[in-house]
Length: 177
Image (cartoon, rainbow, N blue to C red):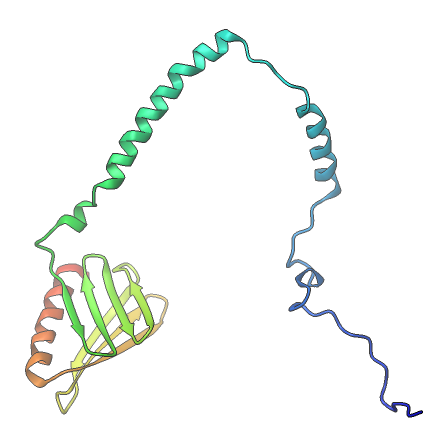
């Protein structure tokens, strides 16, 4: 019979198989909380019968709550004032792989299956330029948190110059320099 020469090591429980093995990762409940829940369950087992006077007093309050809920639903169904503004200045530059959009809500980049959006409060600066050959329109957003995000859009020279003007108009309208 053959025997192994290597050491016999027990398997190690790692966080991937048992997250509770890392202290602080899974909160532990104090024993006092368990005792309180048991005593609350014992008290909750007694059935309380409501008085008819209390039931009548609660009924009008429920109708007021229903009316408030109806008005909330009605206001939620209406689009916000910003969304209905048809005079809003917008910009969109896109090719087959990605693009850049800017409007009242902020700047939105797409590239293949990835997307990111920035509100105007998050944007620190916006740079844009046309490549030397005129085939690429570059837009770079620098965030307040010192992040830098770039999208390159393929185009022709004429369209790149139009996009520059459109983006300048949007930045003048929404971005506070």
